[in-house]
Amino acid sequence: MSRRGLVTAAVSAALLVVALALSLGVGSVAIAPADVVRALSGRGDATRLAIVRELRLPRALLGVLVGGALGLSGAALQALLQNPLADPYLLGVSGGAACGTLLFSVLGGTALATSGAFALPLAAFFGALGAILLVGVGASVDGRLDRGRLLLSGVVVNAFASAVLLFLLSWGDPSRTQGFVFWMLGSLSGATAAGVEALSVYAALGLAILLPLARAFDALTLGEETAFTLGVSVERVKRVAYVAASLLAAAAVSFAGIIGFVGLLVPHVARRIVRGHRAVLVVSFVGGGTLLTFADVVARTLFSPAEISIGAVTALIGAPAFLVLLRRRG
Image (cartoon, helix red, strand yellow):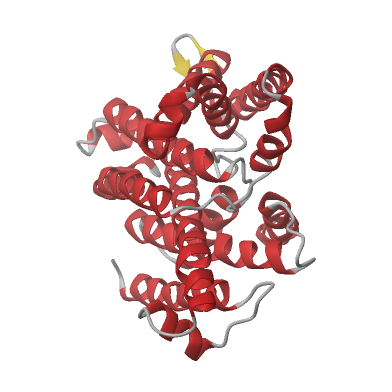
C-alpha cells in the first residue's frame, strides 16, 4: 500500500474511533466519555455497565462490521465490473439476501432459535446467489456478461425480490410482520454478542478472499484481454470475487436488513482518494464501518426515544453526496 493509502487508512481509522465513541456515549441516556471507559473496563454503575456493554457495544461493533462488509462488497463488485454504479443493492444481491433471510426466518422455527447467528447469513447467501444467477441470465448475451444490460437486469431482479418479500410478509405471522418490515428498512436494534461474533467470521473470510485479488483487480482496469495476457485467470477471479462479494453482502443483510448507498458511495470515494485496489478495499471496509456507525447514531438520536430506519439515514446522506460527486466528475 502506498504512503497516501496508509495515511488515508489511518484517517479513516481515526474517524471510526470517533464514531464508536459517539455510538457508546450518545443515546436516550447520555454517558460521559470517562464513564464509558470505566464501563468498558467493567467498573462503574450497574445501569451504565448494562447500557454500554450489553446494548451499545454490540450495536456499535455490528454497525462497523455491517458497514465494512457492504463497503468491501461494493468495492469488489465495482472493480470486477468496472462500473462505478455497481453495488449489492442495485445489482439485486441485497434483495435476494433479504429473501433468503426472511424465508429462513419464516420457515426455520427451531433451527433459527438454535443456530440463527451463523445460519442466517448462509440462508441470505443462497438468496443472494439466486439473485446473481437471475441478474446474470438477464444480462448475458451469447454466453458473456453484457455490462450495459447489467444494471437494468439488477433493477428487474430487485423488483422481483421486493414482490417475494411482500408475499412472505403477507404469508407469515402477522404479529411478526412489523418487526420484519422495520428490519427490511435497515436496523441494528437486534444486535447481540453472538451476531457480532458470527458476522466477524464472515467479514474476516471476505477480507481474506478479496485482498489477495487486489492485483487482479488492478489488471482488470486495463481490460479483460490485457489482464489475461498479464497472467490473470479472469474467469476464476470473476467467480471467486462474485461469491465473496455476495457472501459479505448477504451476511450484512441478514443482521441489519437492506441498507443502500454504503456499498455504492464509500468505494466511489475511496477510488478518488487512493490508488490501487488493495488500498481501495481496505479504505472501503473502514469507511463503510464509519459511515454506518455515524448513520446509526443519527437514526437513534434524531427523534429520541423513537428510532428511525438506518437505511433512510444512509439514503439521505448518500444520495446528495453521490450526486455531488457525479457533478464534480462531469
